[in-house]
Image 1 (cartoon, rainbow, N blue to C red):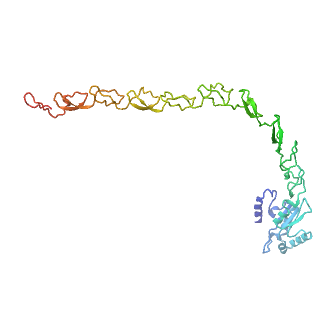
Image 2: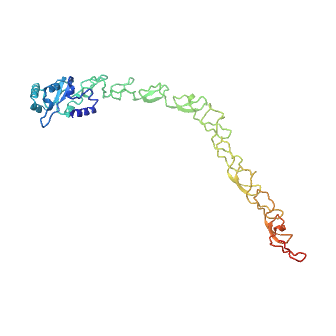
Image 3: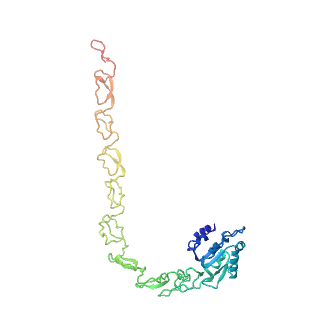
Length: 401
């Protein structure tokens, strides 16, 4: 049970315990190691020590170490169970190698000896594998003393990082480096006044070279292409500087160019599209409707709805640009038919025809009245009487319908 528990704990500290091997005594016969930590395991109220009574197995357990052997166990219980352990205890007591704590001697400071009974005491006495004295070594890169407590890892301090303030200075002005000793010195960031080749003075970082620094002082310069005098940073080349002066050319449309000075790019404005609002009226406009497109866009027909008087005299709502050439008025005709004087029943755009108004007319053949279209002359067939009321020459009533 102790074997499996220790092996489980070992996995949690795989880096710290690299190279450590845990095994049972029976599996370690014929093998040996420089240092052996031997756990005797047996410690109980029954006094049962198991195979620790067998001399050959005890011999195997105590003979595996070449340089150091540490035994953890209950010596009183072992001595009460076997005479062999009584002899072993006597030998250990004579050499002062038995007790309730493990002696810890620092390998770097041999005069430092402590005893630890618990894991907490080991951590206290040897926090970094050595003792509690300060490390007496010097760091190889800077020569400063190691700031750590006595440690056994990295004995040559090749991986150590000195936490002291850096003592190096910049070459030209001896400004102190602001970082820690182990860090790479950055370019000097102390601000100093420097006079540039253009005779302007600026407050710059110490590491900035005045010859390569681009002077930001605003000065007046003449642009060679357009001869305009403008403000620009001192380091800027006028030949490569884009002129900020507004173009003052008046276009054919009457508007002014809205671009900045462009004497080398379409100076004649042949490719320029004027984006001002159009100042013309819509195409075909008969009113005062201004075009709402941009100046460079082609004006469209005026689609504003207005009232116009057609050739027939009626008012109608149509698009402003509509000339009413093919317009068909859908209002009732106001004309009278010349033959009868009745009002025309057709639409205004339709030509007036024969009158279709129904009027009462007398049938010449029978004298009866009948309602018939004005344009027609009534005939006998149009009579609605059931029988003829005429008297024949013989004096008899006509029998025809």
